[in-house]
Structures are given as structure tokens and as C-alpha cells.
Image (cartoon, rainbow, N blue to C red; front, top):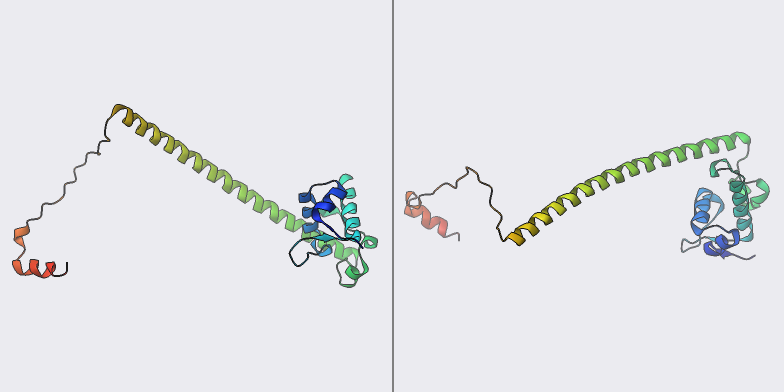
Length: 174
């Protein structure tokens, strides 16, 4: 029995490695990782991937593809990875539909956040460009930026109003 890596499996099937990984993650109970977290595909698993590819080429989506029992190994049937009845298959199908719906909502939220962040970044870029233009203009004309005028004045403190004892006491701290 020969085992191949994801790259070799994708070449055998004529699809990208990302596609193989997506299929494998969708049908994760049927495909196992090695100790390093890499997928190794046996002949049996390659036949499962071929079946998935054929079904997709016929226009089915991953959610509608049910792996046939004859392609599932006997060990997987023993541990309950294959639905026992049509009712179980319906429940699993509904669960997958809910998971897909949840994933789609999460993707929509992330997309909205990304668009909002892009808008904020565009505003910041515009502000930086305006600041850079005004600094460049000031450097060309040789003018210094003027401080905004305000009515605020610092209070004048009369140093003689403090008794001599207290001044000496505070100075001892410094």
C-alpha cells in the first residue's frame, strides 16, 4: 500500500493542493494526519478523493456529496464514521448546512470589518498626505508653523508670598 503527500495527491487528481486540503478538512473523519500534522493518502483515500472530484465535476456541492459505503474502509464503518441510516444522514446533512451557514455569516462579518478598516486607513492616508503637503509647503517658503492663539495665560506665582520655612522644607525633598 503506497502513501502519498498532499502535493502528489493533488497532481494525481489534477487539482490544486488547496482544493485537496479543503476536501480533506470537510471530510476530516475519513482522512488522518501524521504526527507532524501532514496528510498522507493511501490508495483507499485517493479513491475517496477521486469520488469527491467526480461528484463536484457533476455539479454537486461538498454538502450534497455522501461518500459511498463501498469506498469507506471497514475500519471506518466499525467506528461509526458512516451513517447507519437515512435519518442519520439527514441529521448530518442538516448539521453541515448549519455549519456552512455559520461560516458564511462569520465571513460576512469579517468582510464588513475589513471594509470598515480600509475606509479608516484611507482617511488616515489622506490626513497624512495633507500633513506632508503642508510641511513641504512650509519648508519651501521657510515659514515656521504658528501657534494657535488662545486666551490662556500661565498664572504668575509670587515666590515671596511663601514663608521661608516652607520653602526650605520643600527644597529638602529635592
